[in-house]
Amino acid sequence: MQKRMLPRHIAIIMDGNGRWAEIRGLPRLEGHRRGVIRVREIVETAYRIGIEFLTLYTFSIENWQRPYEEIAVIMRLLEETLEEERDTFIKREIRFKVIGNREKLPDKLKELIEQIEHNTKNYKKLTLQCALSYSSRDELVRAIRKAIIFNLKPNEISEEMISYLLDTADIPDPDLIIRTSGEQRLSNFLLWQSAYAELYFTSTLWPDFTKEEFLESIYEYQTRERRFGNIPDRTLKCIFSV
Ligand code: IPE
Ligand code: IPE
Ligand code: MG
Image (cartoon, rainbow, N blue to C red; front, side):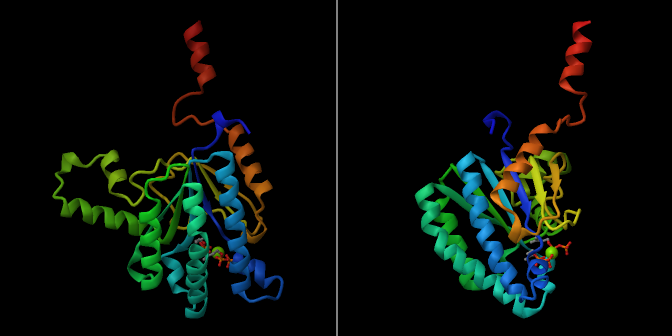
């Protein structure tokens, strides 16, 4: 894998756990459990190949509408997984952080997140950002509230300022957004930050998303031409060499 062409920041909408279980006649909870195995594998791979930032869409604000039993299972799984992984984060110098609206999270999980964030805040090898109780519009609403609280004047509102007020303040925009499970939508994920992200959709359900397919998505990214509204580099060279 060419280091030069690696996306700095990959964000993943990990979708399809429920369907994975349902087609096997298993409870949805089993899909979420299998999903965690993939999370470990993908974080490990991202770390090994030198990705700097990995954001995982883990639970959206809209997901709070789901049946209480499913929510409880997901919250418990999150807590167990974080407990198990905290030493690995420290050993590998992985910075862990959560973006989203924490108000509704169970107290114990909230405390655990705060501890791990604190203990890993200076690490730089990989930043693992977990979008939890997150939705982009909610993030924007909270950003606007902050602007009002800070008493910002109209001419102080700039793109940089808005980025600074978001939960992702110190994280570069994603270069590549992957969504599993065949849905081709963003579902309220990183709407501001995804302005020029490359999108990769796959029908693979999250519990089946292997490290090989993850690498495949990066190879595919490396074939894309990112123009950011400009004309391609090679055309520019042609124009100026005439
Ligand atoms: C993604 O899988 C995990 C969460 C949203 C928490 P889903 O639970 O949405 O799985 P499907 O889309 O119903 O298959
Ligand atoms: C998006 O998946 C949220 C996460 C993967 C955490 P959903 O399953 O909630 O999205 P929709 O409802 O299909 O758009
Ligand atoms: Mg889903």
